[in-house]
Amino acid sequence: MALRSPVPLLACGAVLAAVACSLNVDDLAGKVCTDNSECPAAYACTALGADGERTCEVIYPPHYTQADGGGVDAGPVPTYCKDIQPILAATCVSSCHGEDTSGSSQPSFRLDYYEPTGNGLPGARAKALRIRVRASDLKDMPPAGSPAPSAEERALIARWVTGGAPLCDAPADAGP
Image (cartoon, rainbow, N blue to C red; front, side, top):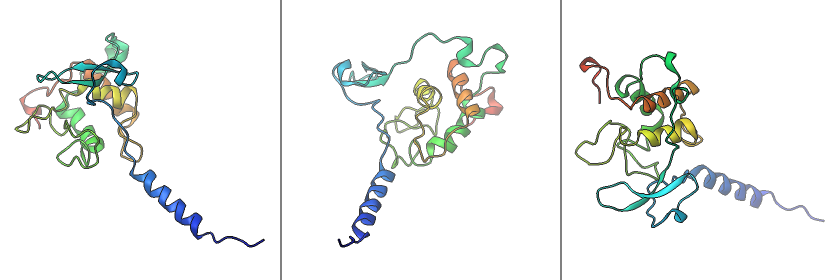
């Protein structure tokens, strides 16, 4: 019995590795839909925009408690300028949700600013609940292989959203 050359197996392995490294996490939020049956279990088909277009959006239970945000002794509510923007800049903005959206399957919003600028794309304030669900609750963002927030940073994001997703403490804290 003759031995087969390992070259075809190595070539196949290289192709599989290249394909696996290029796969994106499929974020179904923002997918156009007509009813809930077209959305995954954690999503609902809803019209959020002024244009009335219905899209799949993450639905989160509306019963926040103090435990959800870290409790009474967790300290002051984090702000976008001082606490959250640096986390988003380090983990979300570089090639997905900033000026460069080449790595994102959802280029319809940006996290490198709080409110929309001249481009009209929603910013971190409009996506605060989604940020909490994906980064803090589900922990499926950022995708594997990307820099990820620490457990403490994920908790800080949850406290920021529970506290109303404020921009800054004072004019001296004013940032992007």
